[in-house]
Amino acid sequence: MSVTPPGGESERPARTAAVIPAAGRGVRLGPGAPKALRPLSGTPMLVHAVRAMAGSRAVSLVVVVAPPDGADEVQRLLDAYPLTGTTEVVVVPGGETRQESVRLGLAAVPDSVTTVLVHDAARPLVPVDTVDAVVAAVRDGSPAVVPALPVTDTVKRVEPRTGDRAGEPEPVVGTPERALLRAVQTPQGFDRATLAAAHEKIVLEGDGATDDAGMVERMGVEVVVVPGHEEAFKVTRPLDLVLAEAVLARRRKNDGF
Image (tube, rainbow, N blue to C red; front, side, top):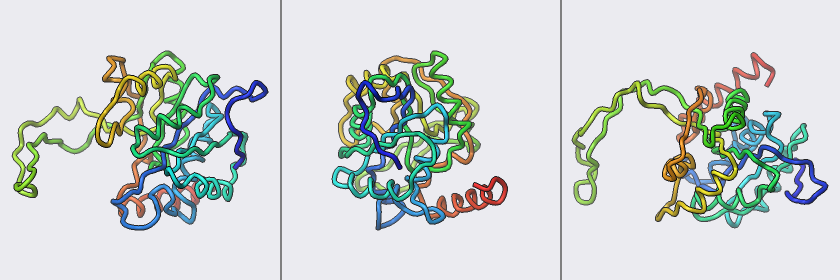
């Protein structure tokens, strides 16, 4: 994977960049390597995610945000799986929270970039058509765009049990209208100035924000939805790995992927 630091007058303008925060441990997949480094059909999930972003002709730069003390390891990993196209890949150390990691990744994006995608490393199989649709919507004037799918299950609002009552049955307090709900995926796309303003103005305590579009919403900026894809699911639990392997096997059979 070619690695060229951003910046410099001679650099080819990177009009659209993708930031991939990959500093999480992925505890729900069990002990071991960080989730983004777990193998999927013999290739780390992070590599699949980088390839998914680089597969879009609109994306000319991918910024991978590594664990704070793991940038060298991630760099060596990506060097072992070089891209075949012209997309540049930069690795930077991240922070203690996802929000901080995205902010650090955004700081590594050159000023020439006007559209920024933020993509979960744990969504390694997002199709290029979905990436392109998000980019197109931002370039058409939407400051914040998220791919999403209709919710197929009935959803209940509950009153969580905490403290000494944790684990007890939780009472239902409402049933949202399913037709008005969407399950959000990534990459989320943003006008670069809008995303930068959100990370400058929205300060959340604890684990910080896990959804950049939600930060933009807090500023009163409209967020719009474009169709997502069923293969852009998040690999979080062991069963998700089984499904991801099946998707890759089908792609190899049908598409030679």
